[in-house]
Image (cartoon, rainbow, N blue to C red; front, side, top):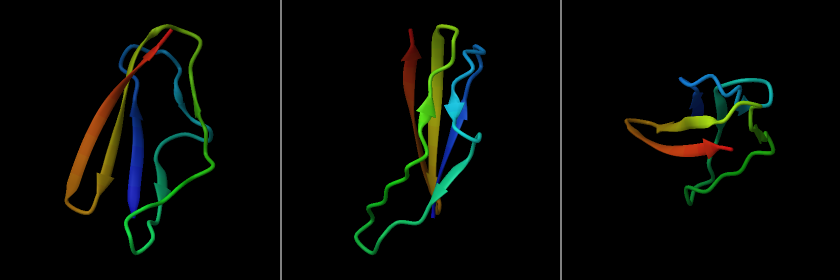
Amino acid sequence: MVSFFVNDPEGTGTDFRGGSPVRITTSSDGTGTTDVPLIAGESPGTVQVKVIAADTSTAFSLEVA
């Protein structure tokens, strides 16, 4: 199970359709997909997407223009 969360401290309005978190189950080779879109908000700023799987997590930043 992998969970994706949007952290939007600048209030851009960015989030996954239906809200965070989005959870997917990966295949035996560790790959997975989802059809839940990430929707950019109407205000510019930086958002962070945090990804958590088991005891591991990472995050990446996106700039909303």
